[in-house]
Image (cartoon, rainbow, N blue to C red; front, side):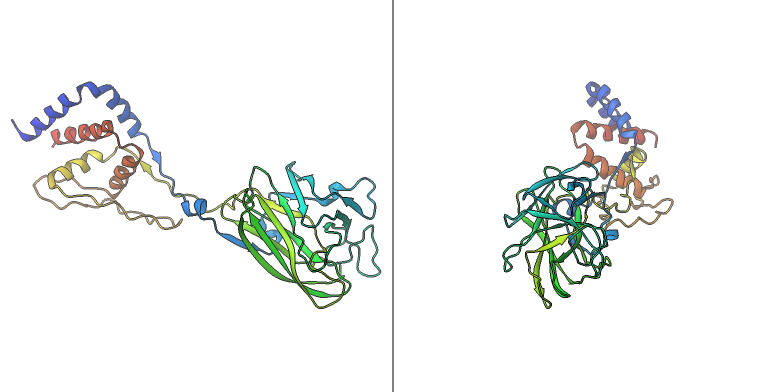
Length: 342
């Protein structure tokens, strides 16, 4: 009896009771399984960036403070601290400040002589609805914090400036927190406050590589030059936020199937050579096109099977998807069947 015939008989007797499950698994193995390459570091170790423009933030939702005003709107509207507001998309957001003072909702008026139905004479755009902290102790910071509740976001920010009597410079701060109030990251940005009403107020925001931000706080950390300005009395205009991460390049996928498993198994059995896993993919770069075929096993007899790189990838992908005894029998059946045909 030849070696190949003996191996075939051994395979058939050992798998008799498993034939039904083996056939079902063989059917599933023939179906292509996409392998998604995921950036796990973005899930477990998110990165954060400072955002300095609305365009860069790429918002998916907004908070318009004007929705708190009655119709017709008065010059100023006092709003309790804290309060809840609905975003444009209907999301409930809690807003608070450190000091107990109520908030002031008003509009940006024009440059001198200050025309318009509002009381903020800064450098937001004319007519912008703004949320002001409405005074307090000048030496203390007084962050405006937006809490997004159970569903975290990926980014958020707004234009900001302190109250002023004349042109002054300042430093704004944005800070992100998780659901437990733990600080995730913070950034500062320098700005200049004027009464030009020209939409030149700086935009400050924060973005994460994961939708893990539960709270975002905006504040003034330093004011210098000019008169009438202080750290705790400031205003922000429309708050923009993004509920998901910015779309990245398409994930790399490749089918893993049972094709080429038989020649691969027979080649490994004939040579006894161990198989080294393919090198890991780096980033999202698209892989270069492989050659038509590559022989990964040196010839040791008159009959040798070519090993394809794709087959190697398929074997190791399948081993991660299912590493049971039944799969081992499936591979064995395929291998011995191919040996019989040699």
